[in-house]
Structure formats: C-alpha cells, structure tokens
Length: 211
Image (cartoon, rainbow, N blue to C red):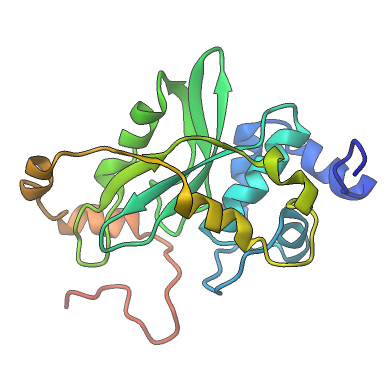
C-alpha cells in the first residue's frame, strides 16, 4: 500500500479539502443518513454520499488521517439500544469527536474534554431509545484503525465487518453503577422531540411512538 493508503488523487483531494474535524463533521451532516445493514469503507461512503453511524465514524477517521490526525475511534455500548461509534481526535491534550448520528446531540464535540470518560459522559443525557430510556452504559478504549491497513479498510469494496467484530471484543469501561442505573428517569417529551429532529425512520414507522 502506498503513502496515500490506496486512495486515488481525486479522493485524497476531497478528503483533504475538509481540512479539519469541524469540516469533516459538516460534510457528514450534509450527507443523508441511511438505515441499511451495511459496513462500507470510506471510499464507498464517499462514492455513495450516504452513511450511518458506524460508516460515518470510519469515514471521519480516514478523513482525519488525511488531514494529519491519527485514525482513532471509540465505541459506546448501550442497554436496550444500539451502540454508537465515534471518530476521536486530540488537540493540545484535549479530546473531541466527529460522528454521524440519527439523533441531533450524538454528533460533533469540540476538543475540550480532558479524558475519554469526560467525552463519553457528554453524550449521556441525550443518548436514549424510543422508549425514552437513557441507555448509554460503557465506552471502549481507543482503536487506531491503522491496525487494519493490511485489510485496506479505507478503500476496499468489501464490507468492513472486521472492525465491528473487533469493537465487540475489546474492553469497555463502565460509566454508571447499578444504583445509578436504577435511579434513572425517562426523558421528557421536549427533549425527545428536540433530539429526534430530522431523524430517519424505516418506512411506515411513526416518528412519535408514544401516541
């Protein structure tokens, strides 16, 4: 694999034109969210111009790499809910994140967090399921996607499920004690409506499942 990691000159120019984490986030925000059960590489995401949470994070990691950052991701595990994957970056010792999400608040974070736990907790209050339960429980250690360079994770036309399998196997750190979990309240209607603004739903599914 060459120094461009398999990208064509045109693809690399596009990634570098995003310039920084915020530019990458804006590109992801402009991209439609899709609900298909896929695991596309960044090249495929760039071509299709659509992604979901996992694909958006992997794309962001590749774009961060093209702009001088390490290609790092972390995984959030949730209870009675789907996991969430973020690309993370560090500026002067503080962590930020770039993410694609079907929920308003589960996306970008400025690099102001002193630890990954602090970063993870910034998502807690707005991480909920359609039963309105707060569901975030753990976060993983960082994964440097360079470990998958020999599998051409950035440019392959094959699904990159191997990254997901790796995330399922690595250690995750607990955010809450059992007592904290028992005392949690469901979110109210105002927060639900705000965080699901523009949410993509499967055909025929109501965006308001509680009446």
